[in-house]
Amino acid sequence: MVNDVVNAGNALSVFDFDGTLTKRDSFVPFLRFAFGKRVFAQRLIRLVIPTLKCIGRKVTRDELKELLIHTFLTNVDAQWVEKKAAEFCDRYWTRLMRPSGLIAVASQVNSGAIVTICSASPAMVLKPFADKLGIRLIGTNLEVKDGMLTGRINGHNCRCGQKVKRLEAEYGPLSSYHLRAWGDTRGDYEMLAAAQEAYWRHFHGAWSKRNPPLAKIRQLKGK
Image (cartoon, rainbow, N blue to C red; front, side, top):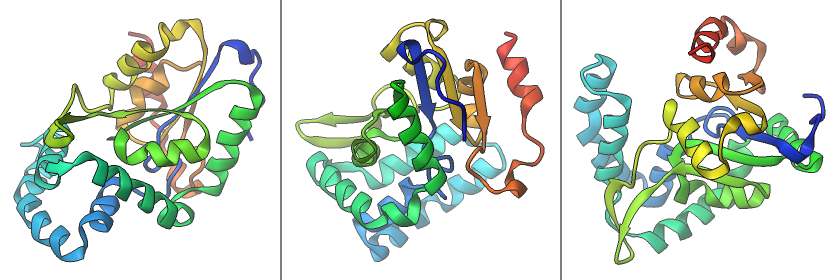
């Protein structure tokens, strides 16, 4: 386990969600759960070509995420999504969450640190998980007008440099904190680089921790 926070009064502990606290992605399984297998499959077909373009680097991950949200969440009642998110959390909590991650979150909460999830997944979907963990949440915000989702992101996808910007918008300069960060993908590099203590795939098996991107993270830290 990670050592206790040295100075809990200014300690900020930040956890990525998908793949870090969970065993796999949560957003796509949520969409399948919420819309049902038939509708999910029908709509997913529209994303085959954009996904192939993303693999070929002709479409960015952010653009693909925007297309996914537009395909599934245009003119959808926001309260319905919130209700489905709560049901999804209740049903899939045990299957999704990493036990070692839950222990680490509880340890940070008990130490007195400010503890938050910082994720690219929609905050609306992750809120029940954050509430159950008893911690704060920063995620990608979805645009809502007159109670309906527009199918667009409000602001930016919360990954890479946007994670640092969102954390600073919420908590002020990160240099004011003893920052600990846990992540598992390229989207977490900047957040890990900003931390005094960075944990790469900390809750994964040994095989997935091979070749950690320490050089790339240190390079970002030096900028």
